[in-house]
Structure formats: C-alpha cells, structure tokens
Image (cartoon, rainbow, N blue to C red; front, side, top):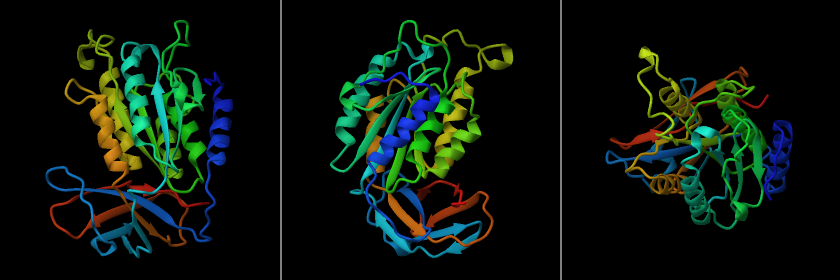
Length: 298
C-alpha cells in the first residue's frame, strides 16, 4: 500500500517499521562496527582476507580489532529512496523496472527492505510488491532529498546488522528543512552506508551552459552532493550513463554488499564529538574503502 505522508508521519512509520523487523541482539558492550570494502588494482573485490590483514586507527591511535567477519551472508536492512520530482519525470519508468529487479535479486531470507519515494513530500511504501515510483501529474513541486535521507536513517538507527540506503536522484535539493550536513550526520549516526546514484534527466538540463556563464548549477552541484553523502558514510557514488546502466550499477552494489568485511572495536572513553577512522590492509596494492568516522553513543 502506498501511503502519502507528512514528513513527521513518514519518520514515525519508518521507525516503527524498522523496529518491527529488528532481530533480538545485544552485546552489552559499546562496539563500533566498520564495514570495509577492499579492491585490487583492477577494481575487483578482494575476498578471503583475515583479521590480521587489517589495521584500524581512531583519531590516529591504533585500535584492537576485537570482532571480525566477512559479511557475504549477514542479514541486510535496505532502504531504497527514489526521487520522483519533476526533474526525474523521463527516467521514472527505468527506475521502477530496475529497482524491482534489484530488490528481487538482492534480498535473501532474513533481509528486510523498505521503499521511500520523495518530491517535496516523503512517501513510505511498505509493501514492496506494489513498487510504484511514478510522479503524480499534479504532485508537489520541489525535492526534499536531505529530509528523505534523515527520515530513513533515523528509522534505521539503533538496529543491529548491516544497514544501507540507496538513493536515486539528481542530487539537487530545493525543499528540505534539514541541511546536507544533517543528512550525512544522521546516516553516520545510524551506521548506514549510502549508495548514491545520480539519475540526471538530460532533457531537463540540455539547455545547460557553464554556471560561470549564467547557466544552471544543478548537474554539478547535485553530483557534488551525492558524492559527499556516499564518501562520508562509506558507501559509493555512481553516475548513470549510456554504458553504466542502472542494472549494471545495481549489480555492483549487490556484489559489494555481499563481499564486505566487518571490523569491530571498543572505543576509548573520551570526547563525544566526531571521531576519525582510518582502515588499511597489509597486502600491498589494495584499496580500502570505509566510512571516515563515527559519532560515539552519547
């Protein structure tokens, strides 16, 4: 059932939905988990690494990795956030088809998912079999990208296991009450990876000339926004092109989600502000991708 919701109502339902799917889990210990992707020089995912292959630092200080596991078979809670504002009107059919195929492929027993579509409003679709992303002819103008991320991330906060948000948008926000920094911070606090896919309607922006010459800043600013959200949460950024299709991008995201490493450590009791994280591997020639920090539990 598709629900038309206010932002506050959408947030409440997202929280309720996430809690309803929560597995019983408690360690009794304040543990920070960091999901890590490792690739070789050819960009291929590296599997089979051991705990001894990793080094983890917090604010420049070495940390003992107390918990370690590959994540290929660990349950996943996934949120799919789809921009249905006017600037996306010609790409919605492709979004719908590829998104349904992705969910059918990636979700396994024990996994959970929810769908949020947004323009100026935020809508939660709880029944994924009713996946619809079409913009309404008389729908609200505007794009509340940051508010949608904040709402979805808050719904995931405090939940165990792996959490990820996939955002399909041109990245240009016109209606949110929350700033970009709040969207990034809320996802970080929820330990949610954000995979952003820039879905740019070329027809809408075909008139564009460089911003320095008075043209629209939307494409470049939107790209910078989506790149930042992905980078600072430990996810990845993708740009939809003729050769880089949505189906290919979804395949890469699925492969990455199923082949990550989870590193867990117990943080020192110090300041409550943002703490920087750096993860490295001992085998040479490999590239490590992980979030660059976290907020300790206050």
